[in-house]
Image (tube, rainbow, N blue to C red; front, side, top):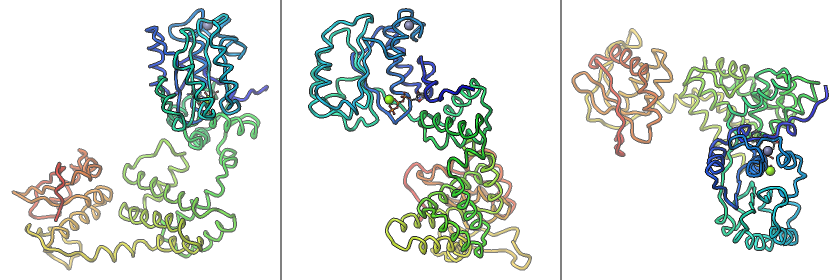
Length: 483
Ligand SMILES: Nc1ncnc2c1ncn2[C@@H]1O[C@H](COP(=O)(O)OP(=O)(O)OP(=O)(O)O)[C@@H](O)[C@H]1O
Ligand SMILES: [Mg+2]
Ligand SMILES: [Zn+2]
């Protein structure tokens, strides 16, 4: 198989092949359709998301001899010359290597001459933020009064470094990182058309490790395909991405969730022996906590994770609770912060890991202390948790909320229970318990307020408490909060 690097082979040649830049594409197409092309464009956005490609497509679209709608034909002389980089009328200037005023001065001279074959003389200035101040000034002069047949397309990853005077003379288009799904589909399509077999998990890893940069994902694919001799599998992908270190952290996190303090020392020893950076480990663990929380709350697999990873979280979710994860999150967040400010990284890391492994005892000592008085009437538990404690009378709203929350937990509705914990009792009138959420807790309100969750509340709570026949939730619009 003669293999041409995907990254080079797959440059988009018309607007429709440009993935994930819908806004830019639609606007450019519209302006071409209405015959309202500007004389100066500025394409900004992260690396490798299609700025240069879009600039070339636009140059072709305005000069094509046989346009297909708003797209260039890619067959006529003008199109093919522009694609090959041999057109006399479409000039690409690399701002990074031509920082000097001379090139821009030359350019100022050159724009005075009519295009040779094309309708528009197009100057694509890449990495325009690299130009020197003098060069900017020279460019500005040209941008001020460009001849009708001249079009500038400036591209940059760093628009903030451009003088405002330049920006204000251009039509500005912001390019985005390519969203996960769109990149996944684009790469899957490319692999299919190249007849390269791939496994979904491997492709998923590639997309995730490219941070929205299409060029990176393509060159990563190239690397893996070269390594395996023509396929994309999870094992090679993980290997090339250096995931063996990550799997050490995965084990450590599993020990924390499983509350296995005796396994912690050797897990940390191993990390340390492999030279894994503790900040990286802490960040990875925070990511795990977040993913586990999502798994627990939604009960669904995440599309952005591999099936193996989803399995990993699903297993751990069985033995986690949201309370615990919130508490863990705080421990890890503090750890990350401490790692920045203190020496003895390993000690700090170890200490946090032990604390995390024992988090259950840390939380339970906290929740015992509850105080405060209340104006609302106490509610009585209908079904006592143990045979010995019959009717339970509580005296503070906090405690009532607590007993409602734990009734749900007992009934194995952990996620609703911990979400409900963010609300407060507004009142209990005529058998209706109203639970309020302050406006900033809307996230929790929305979750609790889903039809199936409301249904669960209405089953579990009236069954557990005498005075309550049904349950309602409200979202406070003002900043009223529980006392
Ligand atoms: N939106 C996209 N759709 C499809 N392929 C893309 C897209 N963006 C980038 N690519 C792929 O990445 C390669 C590089 O893209 P391009 O040079 O257009 O990016 P860029 O935004 O100009 O990057 P840089 O800022 O680094 O110059 C292209 O040849 C193409 O294979
Ligand atoms: Mg570019
Ligand atoms: Zn053409």
